[in-house]
Image (cartoon, rainbow over all chains, first blue to last red; front, side, top):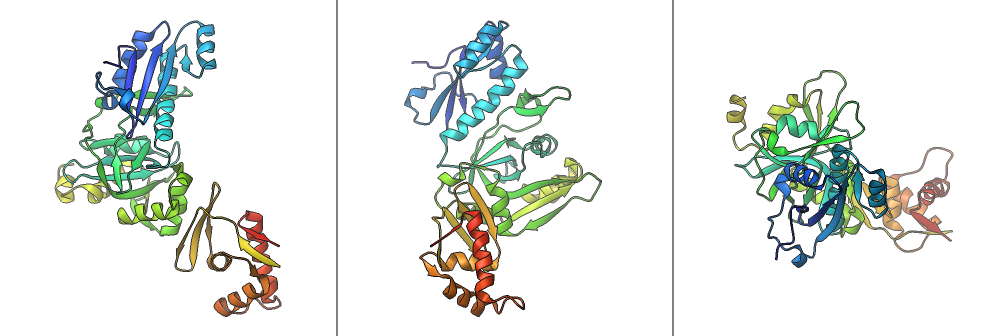
Length: 282
Length: 86
């Protein structure tokens, strides 16, 4: 029996599933916009989520009537009277729901990642909100696999479960981020999972400087990752898990740079199977 | 006075230093606090703790006895919520 419908969308998060019931006077328009933005995360229409233990449900409402919006908010829905706000809030809600589903199971870093399709290796870049993760993906993800711009979810074997959500891009003058369909960029759609090949933090300088990587000592790296991890305390031996993740990636590095494109060569060296060949092509 | 550390979620030691997780806090500890934590899994007398630290790290700065120096660091760890005392 089909569970998903024109107004119930099934979103695949990192190993979990979130059903989104779309309502309001503009439900069809909203549903279409969500389908486009989340194209790489949609479950098939005939996927039966009732058989899945890791699933949850959200409601999204776009309506011109403030009382309809207020009632929807009252019952816990994502609701607003403009589409951009609904999409912005819905992305946050889906991501939070996905994280909640995997609490105590996956190691979930506040990070972006791109991967090389041939090598199967991914580079994860950890940064707080506004720290340059999405810009990094936009600038350096061309012709690479787009893994995520928000949550790097790692299994116990240090494999990244892709979460190719819409890119959340700040819009000047607006207090929200527009949610952009990843198909609009020259990314490769993920299959996955992907091996964690490199782990960086992003340190953008205010002044031009040659891009470089600085090795971060393990204990400092663990402390940094801990501040950018969801539900860390629910994992067994959480600090040891972080240390093992750093070791699996061959160490943790601080990427010091001025513009994201300055990191192009370093990214190629980190994950491309033939870095010199890929550099020759740029 | 006897001291011991609280229940830890995790304690990762590398060399002389460590990172400890308790509650929602993650704290990077230098060598002496790390040694205090390692020695205080069970109740330990402050005097014995001070002797151990002096043997391992040498005499504290001039004018400060080992027990007083240890007591000061234990006080800081107590304020953090890592150590309890009786």
